[in-house]
Image 1 (tube, rainbow, N blue to C red):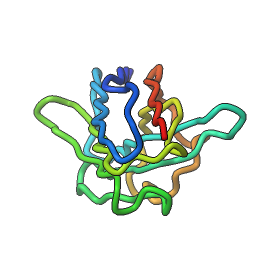
Image 2 (cartoon, rainbow, N blue to C red):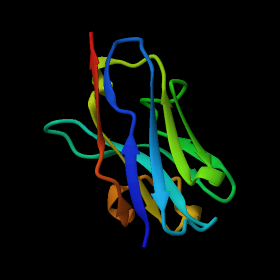
Image 3 (cartoon, rainbow, N blue to C red):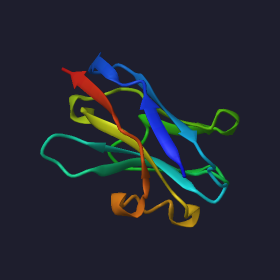
Image 4 (spheres, helix red, strand yellow):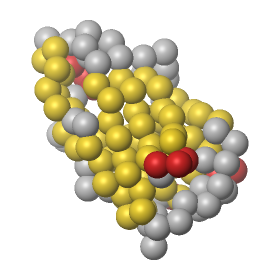
Length: 126
């Protein structure tokens, strides 16, 4: 059983940066896909970035390319999301998730991910 716990959210002004962390317990196989998702009030959950844990291949939503970076520390079993040049439209609840199919990591459909953290709020003010 995989458990995920996020941290690092908060409030920041536009143009600022935040780093989110997701601590994983249980066993994350090298064939897994882990990712960050977000959901703003009144909107559907959307994929932000994913990483194929075994190969380190990353994928990003167009809206965050060049501003966000997903990374992993296998020794600490932790997933990160570095968010730079934040915009008010980045305001959302951010959650990390995992699925046991790294080969489909390019597909950020939330319904395909079976393991979820509780989320951490990110608020960006203008």
